[in-house]
Image (tube, rainbow, N blue to C red; front, side):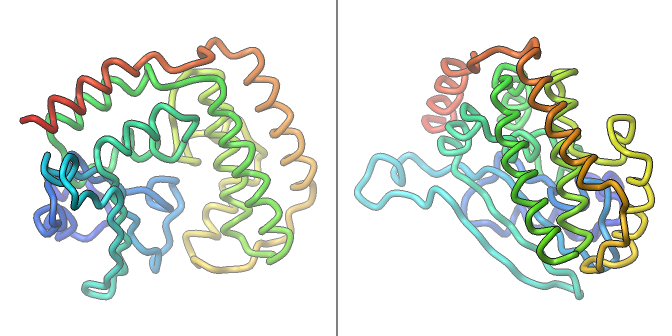
Amino acid sequence: MNPSSLPDLPAWLPEVAGEQPHPLAFATVSGAHLYGFPSADSDVDLRGVHVLPAERVVGLRTGPDTLERTWTREGVEVDLVTHDLAKFCRLLLRRNGYVLEQLLSPLVVAASPLHEELVALAPACLTRHHAHHYLGFARTQWRLSEKTGRLKPLLYTFRVLLTGLHLMRAGEVQADLTRLYAYGPPYLPDLVAAKREAEHGAAPPVPGAAEDVERLSAALAEARDSSALPEEPTAHDALHDLVVRARLA
């Protein structure tokens, strides 16, 4: 992976893939960098998939299904979470927006033919019920915003609502808030600019924010009900075959 394809991120980031205990099918950048509002002191959230060898799946000493690691290099905090391929595919078949965003992130740190196959199967994992994920996350972030007065959860509230709305209407996963302004209120660019200046700053006064959150939540629920997306994913068999082939390779 060419580091130049990861703007504003450390040039050494692709080295992380070779430092893991199991081969990575992929690793991508998530979090604020993916969402379009990183600040100078934002940590780097890496998410991806590792592939356990067959003996760690069929033997008595199995796993780990999930690996987590946090460290600091050159003043940059890196948070890495990877799931084993089978666990990740099971998550893809649920209404889990997180894993879809991680898989389809354009900020790719490590890739492989397995990654390409997973990306190709992503459309067959989309359902109208992914709206429940985004509505639930929005409620949680809005409550946190009201409780703390912080800007970050306020932006997360709008980010997930607009990502969900775009998914229901266009059938496409778009996690970058700056590409979704057309769906939201006109003050969002100012909030993004403020977040880029300070990672943990207080939210400026935003008259009408509560009404906008309520309106967008209702719009997302309505878009779910009228979406052309299917009720259930159709990628079960293809993902099963992919996991078997990867495990036996």
